[in-house]
Length: 227
Image (cartoon, rainbow, N blue to C red; front, side):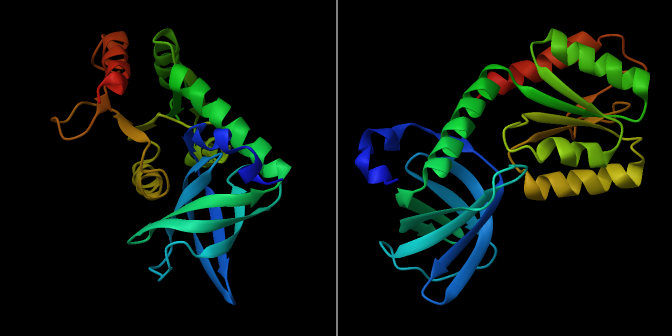
């Protein structure tokens, strides 16, 4: 199905998305990660710098993280290149790919209305307490006692997590590794630490010695609306 046959849909918005993209130009293949996706095209971050001619036609293979659908193929052209960031406009795309994009846009709109929060804490009572505070503040919450659970949650391309709260006791080494992984793979997701307050260097939820958890959570949620 050609997206050119329905040009009014090109401006239907974009959704932040995670996935793998392979660009095929002549006999060369260029790999990268998806940045966002829309009816009219996509933006991606290349694994390595490459030289593209603006306006060049290119074949695109795309697979969203956590998506049950197989690789999707489209044809497009390069519209912008800044460093390793590439913007591509679709020329033709399958009906399955168009449906996938529409589902992503709907999910993104829903996530904008109801923020998604992931709480990672092996201390079950504390995890439940923090999750309840976020739910009371209007968030949809996913709970995990281990880092692997977070990866499974984020592997669903439609979750669009806004914040991930990670306990310093996850254990500490795993918590540091998880934060490093999330910063690299999901830079738009806000990270919050769970533990005793230590200065002001990082956003932190302190539960054990502070009785005002609801107020702390409410203040964090309010920062979501500050541009």
